[in-house]
Amino acid sequence: MPAGGVWVTMNKKIVAVFYAFLAAVFYALNAPGSKVLLENVDSSMLAGLLYLGAGVGIGGLSLLRGTKRREAEKLSRADLPYVAGMVLLDIAAPVLLMYGLKYTNASSASLLNNFEIVATTVIAWVIFREAVSWRLWLGVALITLSSILLSCESPAGLTEGLSFSWGALPVLAATVCWGFENNCTRKLSGKDTYEIVFVKGIFSGTGAVILALCTGEHFPAWPYPVAAMGLGFVAYGLSIFFYIRAQAGIGAAKTSAYYAVAPFIGALLSFAFLRETLSAHYLPALLIMLAGSALVVADTLILRHVHSHTHVITHTHDGSTHTHVIEHAHEHTHLGAGHVHHHHHPDAEIHRSANA
Image (cartoon, rainbow, N blue to C red; front, side):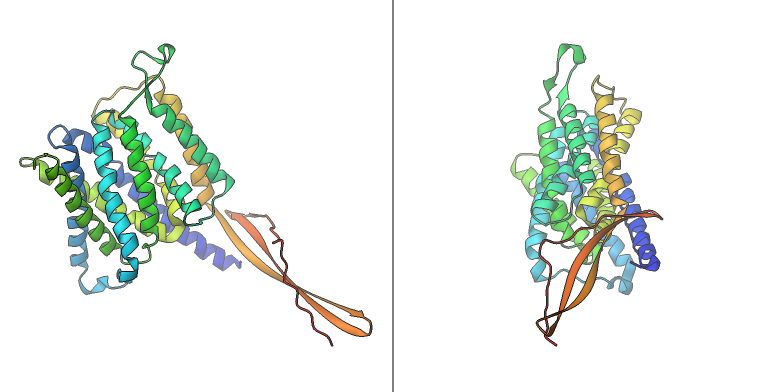
């Protein structure tokens, strides 16, 4: 690839990475903020209000754009399966997360959210055929190990053994739902971002509120609905908005990797404002999570390009001239200013012969 093309690709990646980090920073407010609100708002009701806040807030921003907002393609009937999957999964995931937060502390729940990287990566690779490198797999393995540690609690310290925290199960289930949802949203990332977030927020939020009312939960008293929707606008609405913008540039698995910074920020906020204490196994889990996230983030900085080459071989046999055209591809991996070449030759080469 020419130097100019590499530079343009790097610029697009840098912008996408910036969007992913913004999404992470906004979402980091979710766990500690929701933990506080759960003292006065039921779990499913809170999940619904968070998404309604996202939909209403982004819908308002869309109106402020006026006539300039019709730059991206709108959702169509062909997108309906992915839209339906996105909405249903976004009803289930936050309900599971709010339920899990009732039985585990916000700092551990924040780091457990990084298991979303594992779910998103596996689903993107198995179902949607996104390329996954060995660095990404190694990072995913470390994040999985960290999540297992965070799923256990040891009130008296590691020396007396670990016991499983049941609050971790719904949190992990929420991340799996979001892993599927991330890949559904990835299929829509080329469409109008405002419209996607609006649809996601309004329909998912309404569904969760209806679910809450049907299961006996009550609508909270003033001012908790406003506080919940305000948190939802920032932690879900703005976060999802920039997440989708990042997905369009670097894909679902890579965006999820950069998004890994959110749980660390959320855990820090939990320690600072909720005065939560560190368990004996929290620090090693954090270090393993950092190492895994660093590997995944490093992998996203690598540019991979496939170059096709054609070789023409001419030879004479039995008085006839034969021309063979052999085509093969080399995969080049670039990192930063310099680059390293990894060559890949397909098993089947293309041969074309002509008699002269």
